[in-house]
Image 1: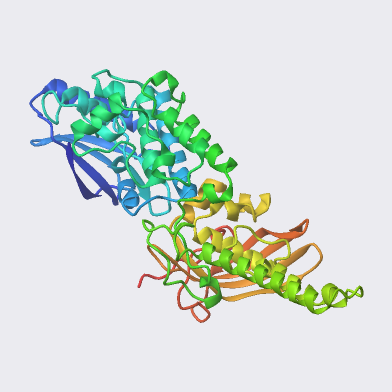
Image 2 (image 1 turned 90 degrees about the vertical axis):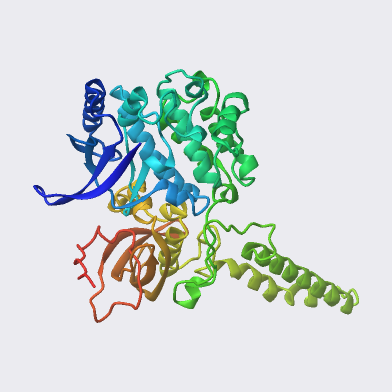
Length: 487
């Protein structure tokens, strides 16, 4: 449909993306149509929409000058495999907000797909080509008689030649959500014609068939979003994503985080980033012999069996003595030992234990963020800390590039009955950078556990910076970090 160039705006001194549409500039009606649609796109002032700055013509076609988004496309993200639910829902919320804003102004997208969703390096999702796809289809600039769009994301009514309305964009968003969560397209085939036939004549795809660990309620939401009848789909894109998020929130932890990429459970104890983290596309499940959770369960079962055998031997050795001393006192230390295991910090347990220390709670918060368990990390912060983090979407977006983290320094420097302060130096890795952060985290007691309540964090001075590091939740919410000098 077009060629896109990275250019420099000489007047404003900023990078821009220039899209050259492959259109016939001799067709004045066509040029007017693109200008009208591009103006509609320019009228959409929304943080999740790629901004349109200008429209121009030259001898080769229509030029649209747009915001340059420094990052990558959602298609690149999906190519790595299933996206963790927390990350996927954050992306989908942004795209849904953009679509609903456009729909409220009478603008349809008609070509929602991963390639048209740009992911800024800070995690913000931006929808591109709003309005342009409509003009492109009406002018048939691809090939005479062809239908614009990718068959796997097109609603049945569109493939049948009907124009479609906002329900068609909702269908496309549901198809994108299916692919994000499962790692494969909602409808697959060897040719576009085969895919189109299955979309029109086949039943809506089932997420559980593609991802058995997915919540049944989430699969039902996507089946409604991918329904052949537009009237059966959620009324808005936002409603679709809200229902999907509710399904994951209500699911057991194992199902809600089924697609999360596993991390090595012992990484925090080694004091550095783990080299054993699997690629996102290779997901360990409980059916694999190498699964760490399965090995832990087997060890626990073996330990319990050993205790039972020991108790039986002791009982037999006592000869039925009514004093009960061997039975009453000998097994007690073993039972106490097995209960203490889950309290060890920096493991891959799904929840912080009530007995966790303030320092262990801080470690748990950041380790959850590193493995994209944003909901779990969020539950370890007070409402005050959550406001300091800028809200859940801002927090999850800012941590989406975090891959691993450790702490050369992590200690409780003060503690009272209801408050504590933890000093830290972080040492972790982002996808695109390495950060060094020092400072303190304030905690308060809530019942039997500690919660993070405030952040006072800054870029480490050069003399005390760890060898490697990572951005911290709340890093830019306390003291303003000094900008690192370019290397």
